[in-house]
Length: 141
Image (cartoon, rainbow, N blue to C red; front, top):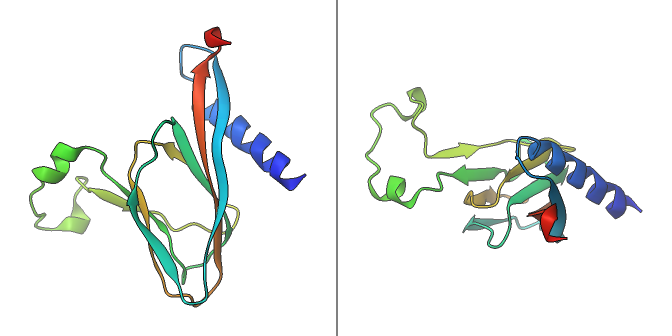
């Protein structure tokens, strides 16, 4: 029952996220799974999702001592031509964003956005649900 409620919440949030689209959308879950980093820690390298429109996380267990998502600039040309910043923390031209979640944080993002999780030291429990959604114009159904 809890999975159904979570799926309904994801779908409702996705509809809100897509509210400015000029077509009616049918939202379909393509993936939904739980990730947990063990007592010895964990993490994962930069990835991006194929064949989808939106991805997201729902954080179950996390703290300031656990892993967190890092989002990267999706433009390959930006990475190739990137110059070092003189004062990296004092510019709006950042190439990544670190977001520190708390338990209960719901996060949605475009599936084309590369992301990774920082290395978790395994000091405290870290668990989250990762999901992917695809949107279809309802004229196809």
